[in-house]
Length: 190
Image (cartoon, rainbow, N blue to C red; front, side, top):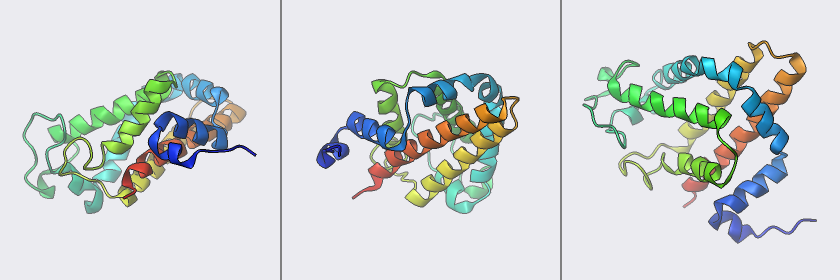
């Protein structure tokens, strides 16, 4: 039986990542599968981002979080939900962030910096980072992660990869999305 320092799980993101990866079974072979999917996922990132934002903007509970000024955005903010659509500059700014997120998943090394990135992705959606006035409820973040898992799986199912490679790659992304979801959820614990 492995001994886990539960206090360290809460204080050390790398230790937490290593534990989750080991427990879930996310290892170097999964990383290779994810990175090998770059030719299938990379060219479709724009489409995946558009699909994600179409969904986010179709619910007031998720869209309302794009009305306040986003951290790092320098342009004019929408006045209210009625002024918000997929072409608004602030939405384009947010789409660019999601685009970079997908690129990071398929292109970055899964090292300490990546663990810090996954952790910051969780933290930035709370009042603890970014715009202190914006705190996305956990239910909305869970919904987003479920959606991202699905759009990635859909893109892989539609890819020319052989069935066995498709299934293995979907499983690898699924493990990664659960790790990411934990790195989101950890910032919601009071």
